[in-house]
Image 1 (cartoon, helix red, strand yellow):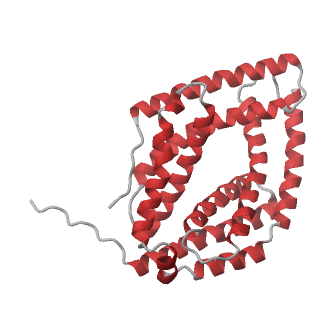
Image 2 (cartoon, helix red, strand yellow):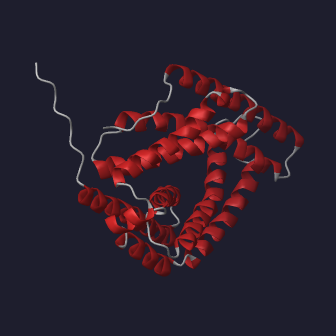
Image 3 (tube, rainbow, N blue to C red):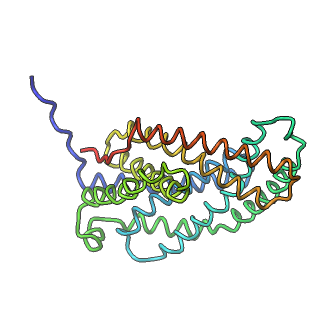
Length: 290
């Protein structure tokens, strides 16, 4: 029986063309969603814009070391600021969904918390509207176009001295190392900070693999689905931490605060149990598909 022939890598010109296309497509999606949110303030569009900003930041981080010098720092700062601004509204909306899904006689839609979260949401929407209108998209668009256009084999050789394949391989190792270092300690109940760092590291690896899957024409579906599963549980655990911070800023009746605190503690414990089970049954391993 003959073995299946090894799948060839795309040539360097194809890799560069696809890489530029993917990076620019991420940027165009961010701009499209920005226009949509300004027009309708739709909740799903706001969430999608936040995700799009993160995906573009992942593409930008890949471009950063190989792109010519320019206004890269300004671009990185502007997009990161956009992500942060959108996060406040997302946390409020998730808090409303979480607490209303656990309605009891102690806490109802007419509770103090519900009213205060609604007021906060209105304020966040105004902040987002102001931030999106002040987002210097024309100048930033020029920067992105220039950066993408100037990424070529010559500039890559000057700045890294290695091929794109070698560069992607190095980045894949760099993205996985913090995950390897954090996984074991992240199951310890009091280790919230390592879990927070692990969530971010997994997110960065997932976005990186999504990019190179398209650029190198490799199937990372299984790995990406597992990363998504990890990210989902860790994301919910991070939500609990954000909800606690949110509640700490609000003046609430003692009985309502006590109920909310116990609800969050129970949810956090259940999520940690699920996360520990996931690490035991489906451990994460380094993957770079040849």
